[in-house]
Length: 210
Image (cartoon, rainbow, N blue to C red; front, side, top):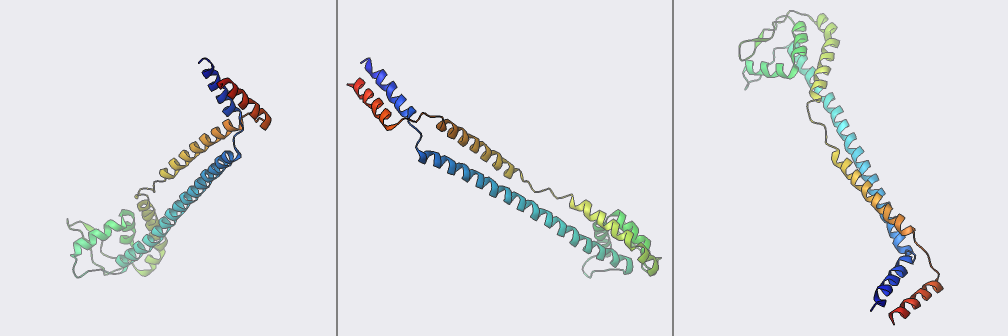
């Protein structure tokens, strides 16, 4: 009975002393390569999402600049109306879209004969026109600059796309690769016995068991 612990110990030594099968090491290497490939693909996808977001923002600014410039010139040169929208409501909505700085420039360049337009509370938003085309052309760069500032300020309002999920994924994959590397390192530290030595140790174990 006292021989059983010795036999168990020798069995453990036999198993621990054997070299790690090449298939196991190859599987670990393949798994590490797969982790690296997943991390690379996820990083590419992260960059793609970031680039698409930046492109959308660029198009947003371009479109909004054109729309606001068209609206500003409309108020500077005409007295716009919509059949189904009260004049005060329309003036108030458009003034809110344009912003205070753009509205100030519009009121400086509104053409003569254009009437004053008030909001719903009776406050004058678009003053009566007193300018001419020469003044409008001279003030056009200032108008565009104010519109671009307004669009840039509006572009900061939407929340940025959350990319933390990609960062968490990369952190997790890095952790898995470290674990995989530690396992591989442990399995590399083995004692490779010759077939004769393994057979001899096996015979010794069988002898003890008898």
